[in-house]
Amino acid sequence: MKEAMLYEALSGGQVRCNLCGHRCLLKAGQRGICQVRENREGKLYSLVYGRTISANVDPIEKKPLFHVAPGSSAYSIATPGCNFRCSWCQNWQISQMPREQHFVAGRQVSPEQIVADAQRKGCRSISYTYTEPTVFFEYAYDTARAAREAGLFNTFVTNGFMTREMLDTFEPYLDAANVDLKAFRDDTYRKYAGGRLEPVLDSLRRMKDLGVWVEVTTLVIPTVNDSSEELSDIAEFVANDLGRDTPWHISRFFPTYKMDDLSPTPVATLREAREIGIEAGLEYVYLGNVADADGENTYCPGCKAVVIERRGFSGTVNHLRDGACANCGRKAAGLAM
Image (tube, rainbow, N blue to C red; front, side, top):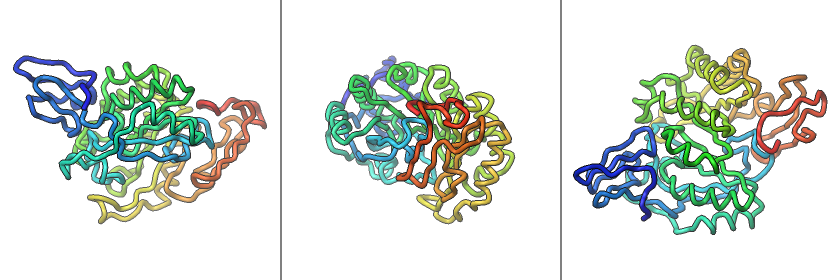
């Protein structure tokens, strides 16, 4: 255990956690909605500091982050726990472990060991991913500081349901984030994820204000968020509030967890969503979980030449020269392009 950051002690032994949008008010002995932060005698503790449940070397494109050091490797880590309970979670075995199994697993690994292993394996970045990195904030924070000293990028793959205080604290060490924008209806967030929409939108805007490179992912789920109207709302928000150069990843849903009775997203729906994004003025719109060359490649917004070719996660060919299109000279948006 480690005493948590970003909480306030209140009267009667209660504490208020100010890490995520739930802002849980906890009596002594209670755990937050994430089930990995606990009030013990008037102090809030993280139950997952150093408890790595998953550690892998992934292509950075798998996050997905298409505009951060393309073709590089990301050392990816997670602990158990999440502040959401998405019905379609693909990593539910570890994200929901503390809630459903009342158990917190993971092997003890220090931040310094993580950074050393990432360097040893030739990784260019460390990604806090698989579960929700906000709930293992202290562990991620200490690791990110060590990673920055070692010259590595730090990236979050997140649901975006964090507080302004959390982002402002982490900002000096956070280079990029892929944020799941799961829907554009608050009732969808409440019904299927146990969260709310507006805090996610606030986090996205705040990241952009802080200079964090942001990419957005929407998993398109039949009957849940796949209407043309809602997809247009998402595209307009990304273009107008975050910027036309913000990449939007549109991913195909496959049945899983509590939604194993739905059919996979029709490919035609994904292609329609991509056209909606392009019509909204977005310069980089990608398709995920489906083989589609047009939806994987990066095109120069100026001359439309292919500047990065992709075939799945393992085949990335970068045609940029010093981060610019070799054909027209326009700079590609992103980090270390």
